[in-house]
Image 1 (cartoon, rainbow, N blue to C red):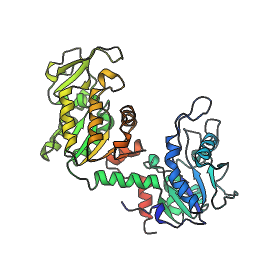
Image 2: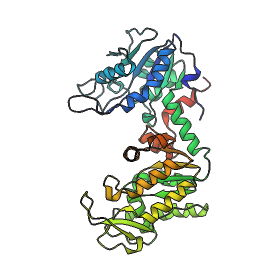
Image 3: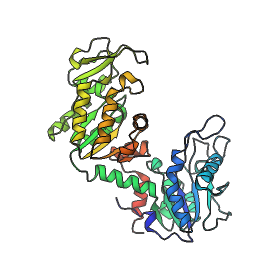
Image 4: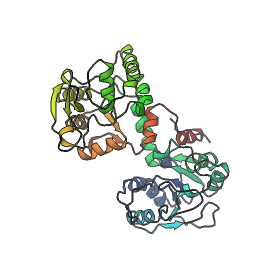
Length: 394
């Protein structure tokens, strides 16, 4: 994927419009409870400020109604936090689409919640052209919204004088391309989660590319069912057994495999007080629930990871929120942390596991995009990136 990069451009004295992802969680009083996304947006903003650009930043926040900025929709708390992190005031600009506001070189302003603008979600050309007229350079630094074709993620990129990827977006594109388009082999993918149905497209796409496809959670249970194993009362999707068979057949035809559990951790309920039993997969009884892979399986998966050249991780292999069902995911995390392979991880549960087992510094790249990361794994074209690619020469 070829896109212009912000760091390759001369932004001195230019009006720069940055679409960031500042959609941070807040408590009932409107206080920001977690500011990772704001911090992740700072390198591009600081780069432009240091080069003497006049910087405008916008983002969506929550799910507002178009045409009105409600009390829960305002970016005011984000402006305050961004100002603290940049150690300079960040002015919030309302009703900004038609211009009429000034931004001096070396100054940054935050433009109010872009999803409150009429036409944003429908990618209105009229709105996109108005926003493009505000800047000399458009920067998309919001990978988390790259799978959405909206006015600030797609339309404006068509009409701005120059359109490029920000530092965060550029890093995402580079990492995903490295992992999936020209990976060092063996390429190992880990896909966990409750349902095959929610990740069926990803599993099919990866089955055509990877050397080992590790499945976990309810997804693994469906694959066990497909291989003729009893799974008791475990979470699974029996109606997708044929799909699981097809995925295993695709892998087998390529000389690759889906390594299924040989032992599991079972209980009769999912709770912190549940008694966990480690048993062979052939010993699962009618009332057992499989809630993690067993130690033999975990060791085998760790061995596969140890020999990988590239690792793509999306989803845990057990109910890792409870200590007695966290062993498999913990060993997996440790194996990834100690591997010399390039690793990329994404998805909410995966990030929670990375945080729980303190391996963030050992993962090659942690993706900031949830839905965008998953759609990239599916092999889909992400509209925001496609718009930047189209402007690579122009």
